[in-house]
Length: 607
Image (cartoon, rainbow, N blue to C red; front, top):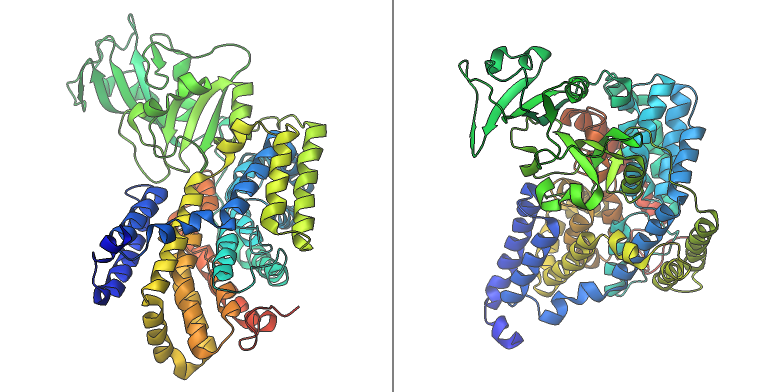
């Protein structure tokens, strides 16, 4: 079978084909026509179908220990969430951060970066969005002055340890396959701490001055100005029946009526359109007016898509703003497809998407990370969804109950795994796997929930892009590109070549995920180091750090989570993050040769 596949592309065409697939991957990741995991699998099929990789090589990335490390970390983080440890940490961080604006900002960023050195940065950000907005209200500080620095700090913290980010784990696995020792748990900690310190100093002294100071418009304050899309049902006997749409009592309450749904028909209203019994009106309006509508006789907000299903109405029912997190099953699906009302017992009353006017029926809107939902449901269900990171609730909910005994077990197993792996008493993959298994055996997390906690899309992305890097290596494309880059930049020295790869990685992280960008650049960069006789490990770690110091656009999941709640514009991220990216790039390039020499034995970092 492999022999037949090898005939698909002549040897002389293999390099152009693999480079063409690289370009195609960048484009597909950028336009997001389909999910990144599906793109990755399609690229794998293309690599095998064109004979660029054997079937065994194509799937070799999925059998690597990096997959075990990442899956174990997801389970351990899930156990910490399930037992209430994560919420307890978040509550403690918020408590410590109380004080003046500068003290609040410093302690918040320090705590977040320290936590994200050992936990997924997206989880840390999602955990704190709601509490930080509440803290901002208490301290009378604009949330937009805190949320973006918090997201940046969570990303910076990932540069401190091997498990701080999936990119670090992926790069460690790649260099191990190249014959170099994998990264040690705390090998990058010294330079990571410097990166964090520089980042926090920049955000305290310069970054916060570049951020907008939007007024808080949270639901709990009762003066929200975000415009939500909602559906209003005209009930029998309503005073609206017979009124002209644009002169109706509803239109006078500052609602914009976008569309009228009547039976199987839908139309945009005009000056002569009359409201009829049973009409469903697609409207946009602010939260305050939506709450007034709920109390108006003759009309009601249409929950989700099921006419007449008014949802739960008792003392335990709450209405909150909730953010769609990257881990949510709603991402890429509609409310109808997700059957959210039936599955979760929650009613979605309205949808808001920052910077975009929504004009579809609520049940037909394909949701994205960062969308804001106006959700009605029982308090315990909302707390459960927040604990599972399905939604990040912006209104302040009481933290999940801390299950003291199991929480100590989960935290103890995690810390023990870090100690055993950090002291190199056992491979980090085995220590983390053992800790994950123990959390299940000690009932810190149900096994079904453990599987749900694993981000399978990320595992597919890293496993597939690892094979992509292998194809670049096997076809000789890395050698061709390396020689071209070395020839072009050699007159300026080895550091100029390393800087060129560093900048290329930063640019590629804009359309691609950080891990994918690093795995595309890594084989070419390491081949260039071999050509120059330089330290391959220095180049590899440089590429890895480049993928984590890119703050130019809000496409990182942590940034997407704060985009809507902070009412940021795209230019706010560019304005604040571009200078930070330049500063950190200079700092890292200056420090890399200090910790990992440019020349010498490539297998060891300088202690």
